[in-house]
Image 1 (spheres, rainbow, N blue to C red):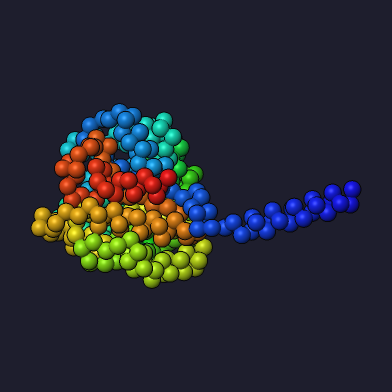
Image 2 (image 1 turned 30 degrees about the horizontal axis):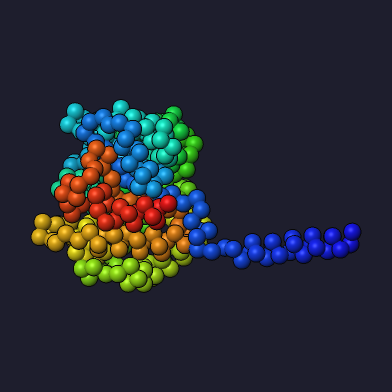
Length: 340
């Protein structure tokens, strides 16, 4: 009997020791949100679109019903007849339901677009103008919070890349978060631009630090995966330190790369000269692989949503050209492998 007990104790000890040593980079991957930013289509679509998402290895989509603000005008326009069906409430509901039927989770991410401008530069000269815009924005956001609760959406994003408006109007954002919490019981995030996240004053009121992760890494035409992984290290250290400081996980609410030479550099500059850039699928694939290789090992990283994915376009390379989507490109196989 004593011999049996001794063997049992030795076995338990060995199992415990083996378990303590089994924390490998792969184990940090458990529970991460591997998603695609779903482009709202002009018309209704079938379940095949969600099967394509699953085939890409993703377990999440970001549903993005856009609103619009014109430069200098303190208004938020939404649900007009000019908008694509997928951006309007009925299209957004349909998208969420099809995603759930396919076993996918959803981040609902209402987002403001500024034609011939950038939402990060949104600013007004008077308190009256700010209040007008904020009233419109609240009227746009809160019904989606209610939709998220009704449809059991897994994550809700309160805004995207308001680089000027967030630090300047902190009280408004805190009131908005409180109102969203009254309507939606799930976790919340905000999508900060890569150079904005450390200046957001209300992370304490949210559940995830959201980052649109367009960090500039290299302007070389086709840097290797190892080169890019090395360039990521200073950014990784900063993100890790910030996560520890705030005691919140970091979610890449957007990340992605054009399929052109130098795509791992300053994306916002490349977009302006896209026609003159040479297509480069390998550069895009390397950049995506390096990001997923580096961050899947990090416990502070909650996952990310690749920008972007078309539900009603698929197949041939010439459909997608130099765009961010990996569909029909070399990057798709990398995505399938890394996401799975």
